[in-house]
Image (cartoon, rainbow, N blue to C red; front, side):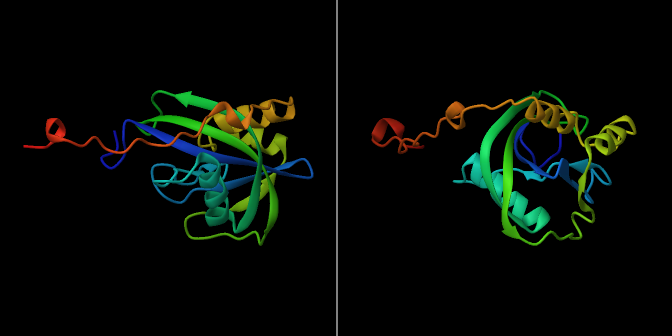
Length: 165
């Protein structure tokens, strides 16, 4: 397992479509160097899953997006990268910004389903979730946004029975 990651990582992905083409980003960092993925990343402390998806889209593509609905949730207990992943895939639409590349994502581009299938056959996708999400979205899959319910955290326990020694 990667030293700085927990056993299971939460991923928040965006499936962004434009004219029948799907937005992918190419990763430049190990262990995913040169692989293509949906714009995605991990939520920061205090951030909801959909807020993380919106932030990651902006950071990775330069685009402002609006989450429309939750398309799929995938759980891979052990990836080739040595961690487990629970990936929440949101179908998102562009609401502003300018498409751009960066050192971390040198290619940010829309691809046809056929081009993505070829990338999959060549082992150039970060995971099978990319094609699964595209196909599920195209088939009309929609999960209610309240599939994952936001709850308030409890305050830490107080009192002498909870005091640290």
